[in-house]
Amino acid sequence: MLIDDSPEVHTLVEIQLSDHNTTVYHAYSCSEALQRLNDCLPDLVLVDYHLLDFDALELLRNPLSGARALPPSVIVLTGPDDHSHSLAFDPGAIDFLRKPFGATELRGRVSAVLQTQALLSRLEHQAAHDRLTGMFNRDGLSPRVDAALARFKAGPRHHFAVLFLDFDNFKRLNDAYGHDVGDDLLRQVGMRLCTLALTGHLTRDDTYEPAIARFGGDEFVVLLEELSGSEEAEEIARRLIMDLGREYWINGMRVASSISIGIAHGSESYSSAAEMLRDADAAMYEAKAAGRGGFVVFDTQLGHRIEKRARTERELRLALESEQLSLAFQPIVNLNSGRLVGLESLLRWQHPELGAIAPADFIPVAVDSGLIGPIGDWVLEKACAQFRELQKQMAGNAPDFIAVNISRRQLTDPCLPAKISAALKASGIHAQCLHLEITESELVTDLNAARDTLREIKQLGVALSVDDFGTGYSSLASLYDFPIDVFKLDRSFIAADLASERGRALMAITHAVLQLARNIGVRVIAEGVETTQQLAVLQSLRCDMAQGYLLGRPMPADQVLTWSRTAVIGKGE
Image 1: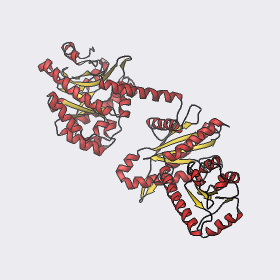
Image 2 (image 1 turned 90 degrees about the vertical axis):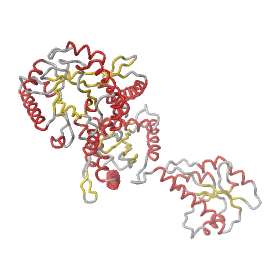
Image 3 (image 1 turned 90 degrees about the horizontal axis):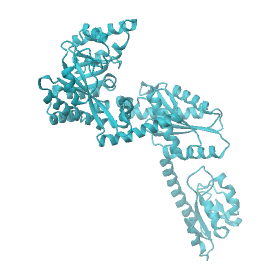
Image 4 (image 1 turned 180 degrees about the horizontal axis):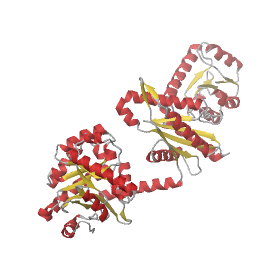
């Protein structure tokens, strides 16, 4: 844009830049130029210093339009003997030209500025866009969410929402087919999202285009504005789940995955895009936890749960450091001899203010936060050490083994075999005295990785148990591939009324599992024995071992010796 009150200067500049691949916008005063800024958005402003006041220069450098982040560069035009142009540098002019100027000088200055602007624009675009898909990234979308929030608060109250999308099982697809296939899938997802936006599937009319971003990995975010209400955002979420969940063709392969979506609606309570995106992200994780392939709307109740979870995580970290955690041991009894043959170590948390906190309230938090790793290491070391002390105290009456639960996070730790070896060495117990329990569902999550790790552990001489057997929906053939020593039969198989049709059916399944275990050389421990009737049935089916409140409740290590002297099968403590 050229701002000068001389028509001759306008003609001269137009001629000199005619073959320079530029468009010249003309204004004959600063006020006229300022009125046109939102229409033409120039990259460069040439302005006569004698027309310029500093307020006008500030506005030229920071145009009101939100359509671009970079303001235009400003070159001041001065007379041949005018030295006051230096004052223009203070508010931000980048160069000056003395009149009269030649074509070569003008073209050189303009070229230099435009090349710099082009480079800055590219850098600006790269900073705000995802390299893989070309969509906005977090830095590119956040200002638009902030702007939508400001419009919402200013009124009229046009509803808007943020949808946080995540592909379920993307990591498994990436690991199975390679990162190139994963990248291709993400590009196709981005293209499908853009197509849905352009064809009006994400809006009720064509008055605006939704802003779409990829935040990294398999996370995408959609900003929806001008909504009729919260129901419309939820309807769009259902549409996205259906459309994005359809199969993709990559290198001749059909690839498909469900998606989970978290929704955060615009609200007066939000002060920034970061807060809104945080809540949409949290709602997405709730959708995954609820079974995947669905959506969850962030609300106050969910916010309280997340706040409680964050508080629990903070206090659990402190608990690990300040010895608030301890172990309880539940007896495992041989159903033929009645002898105490094993103990299962169970984690307990005694909060200094809240008292005993149930494992169901803090174990999921430990898993989600990654604390289950260091906590699991602590449990392994502590259980082995305390079992060794019990062996010394109980001598010939000591149980044969201690069972320690291992999480999936620990199972994927390449250092797990070394940690087990170190715990055995430090405590002095024999490897065959240690049973590691892995739940069936976690065992089959990553069969190959689990198989390799467990075989390495088995070489140490440690026994392996499948916990909650019968609830993980794994094939028996796949479990046979693992070096398993013990099946722990889930309590649900004996909890039903044995006189009912369902109870009789479960007992038939229990009998089949016991027969299968005997055929493949695997022992069985029945969990959750609480009645003498359940105990009698298990004995009649020749189940190897059992545990439950009828046989013995979890107790501190210093009570195990006393319990062992008085316990009788069928009479709980």
